[in-house]
Amino acid sequence: MIKRVDIGVIRLTFSIATVVKVKGVNSYLGDDRHILMWDFDHCSLEEVTDALRKVQTRYFLSDIHILQTNLEGGYHAYCFTAVPWRRAVEILAATAHVDMKYLKWCLFRGRFTLRASEKMGRVPHKIVTLDGYLLPDATVADLHQWVIYETMGGKEYWIKQMKRWQHWWIQLMYRFRLLRI
Image (tube, rainbow, N blue to C red):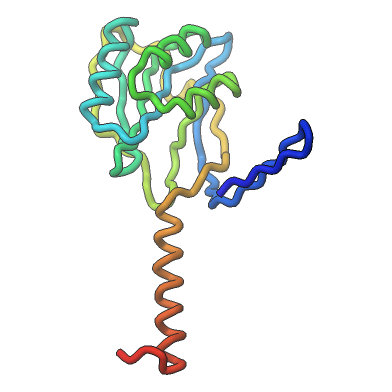
């Protein structure tokens, strides 16, 4: 929930949301070089693979590793071809179905960051590798910026809370004999 209050030319914004701390990795390798990292939400695996195959062919990229992050069409993808930041942004912007909020935050921070740890019981796991045209320029060992950051908890938290509250409410009604089981 987000509430906004405007006072003249000043806007105050208040939000209530579940926040989860997760571990992630940044794309920065040094010397203005980055690996490529994509985030896709609400897409089919076929849409993701088609979009990635097109940019892989257009930019002659190495293998692209696709990970599933949730069952509702959430995917991450990594390519260990090292490119300058502007080229990396160009490649992600040319990718169909990429999450635009993710791209916006990457532009704001000057690097890509993807979650590598568990979030609300979901762990990213590799499901497909698209064979590339070149050998990779980097490896996981070259990624030196592992970070802990906060992200929105998602609907799983609220479903869990609703079940807990529902159980509590039924127990309360039963105790006061408002409900007979």
